[in-house]
Length: 423
Image (cartoon, rainbow, N blue to C red):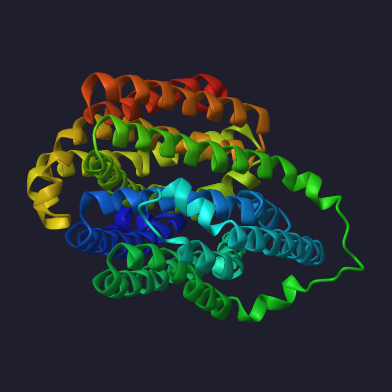
């Protein structure tokens, strides 16, 4: 009993438990949304949604200038220096606001181009990109404020925002997909973050004076501290969508739109169970790693993750693999049953990725810019080349094999690089 009480008193356990509830809700919401999309618009529609999500990822990283992890780090670092914290946030607010306004204007006037590039001439969804242009300030605002709350280590507020945001996204997706099919699915992606921004604003009401904009006191010197975080995030923001779009188009042209939809469904399933790891790493481990001042402290954080989090994740993967044949028709639809053939290689890669994740977060925590960029470019190159080759050789199963190859190589690379902090 004393042992159980000691576990309960640990901060990590409390955060993990509350975060687990948030992730469970998000996974349930994600599966319901995927089910609705699978039933009403099928694999080909899911492929279009995948393309748009890749585009959104690039736009949001450009909008926030890649500052997200840097904001978490410096807000956490300045936790005992309120004036410095206020000055930092005021300057970041103005910089991001100016960038978002420029992006919104460009996006509005290039809507037709992006429609043709992402969806093809057969689809007339330019209005989606114009809607995104109007919603972008609130979209980026939600990401920015959540990053600030993470820096404050306000775990409870961040998790509550995530829960409410997921429920909002579910409501919009179900209603809009039911009435407007593919167009509705795309529109839901655009509109949900606007409502989430209002929720985030409510939770930050007492801290809004931290974001006062002042042109007179604006100095660009603070950008030097964030520039390396920006560079790291933008490398991923640009390379990731380009690689995924290229591979998805290869699958479409080599196999079919349906095959691309199977991969998108697999990617969605993978993203749902990774929500637990990524959220606990962002909410709990990143601020701790940022403030760690010794190799021993860092090593302790690494191994608490390996021993306390990873085993449960791997057990979950095994259970999902065993039950895959029963789960796919329930979570998606019978038309997605071919996805079950991809699970083995996908889960192998995801196991490697789970172990490597905390090591990747150390790049941001300690601002290891050059090492991050080299490993990121290398891993994307491995994924692209292996994906192009294996898809042509093994069909749609090849893309799951490429995932396993990529994260196996990535994990080995990070284990070698961080060997001193680990061993």
